[in-house]
Image: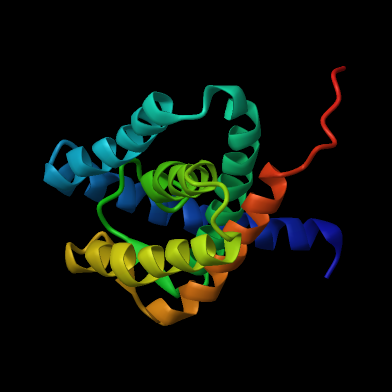
Length: 183
């Protein structure tokens, strides 16, 4: 198969993706947009950042935001992989696009991490990582599943637990870096 044939073949796959997304967008407009699940998703997208803004350690805002950016990047990447591999999907979306679920990947997870990092910094990061992993995997995910925002297909909550622990530990490590120098 030459490059032109490969490009045409890939183009057909992308056309199928676009067609499927058009169907999802129409469904979203008809059954989700401006309904209770959309409003809840909007609150989950804005609320955590308002809480962070009110209670943040103002002298550490940039450092905390760097950790939050890591959490946003890694969680949305993992979420994308999980959705496209058919491990889970989301139904109560704020907007019907990738990343999979913006309130979770861009708001709830990163704010939870940075609030834990700044709260009682003398507590072991391993203990905080276990708290973060446990609350995220065994409390938040089942709640999202119970209200049918998050549908597990080929995934179990306990698979998420060690991933959340690692995400927290890396975000904590990033927050403690001292290699920042003025430009």
